Image 1 (cartoon, one colour):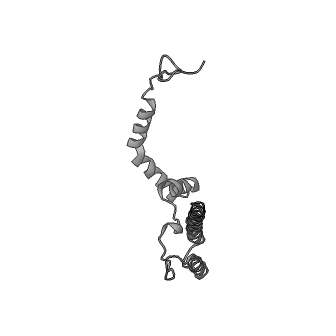
Image 2: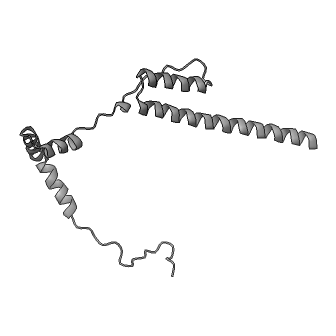
Image 3: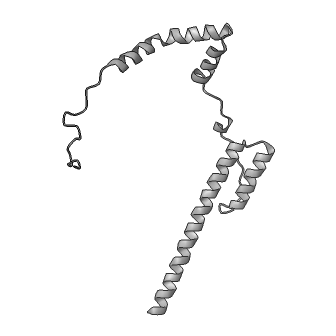
Amino acid sequence: MPFQPGMSGNPRGRRPRSDTEQRQREAIRKALPGIVAKLISSAVAGDTTASKLLLERVMPAYKPQDRPAPLPLPDGTHDLAGAAQAALVGLSSGTLTPDQAGAVAGVLSALVRVKESVELEDRVAALENRTNAQTA
């Protein structure tokens, strides 16, 4: 039997939640400075597990692709091949990381697809206009 619109599949409704999870989170939040201090002292004492946990969870990972990299593009906004060449030069010179060059290539690929779609729409419209003019 399918559910009726506006009617729950559970006639008694959702069970009320306990506050256990919220109380646990609050207790952890209050104890957090002491926990972090203990982790730091353990890491300084040579505990590699504590060191790893601190580095993975407390310190954000350094990602070179997060930094903006200037990419000098050739003149002309429609020169996609020139923009791809500029990305390749940036990669080979070390100005761009491989991730950054890949991101640029992805953007350029999307631009090519947009350009192809616009050109196809224009061609179809021109054909339709020509066909309509011939039949009129």
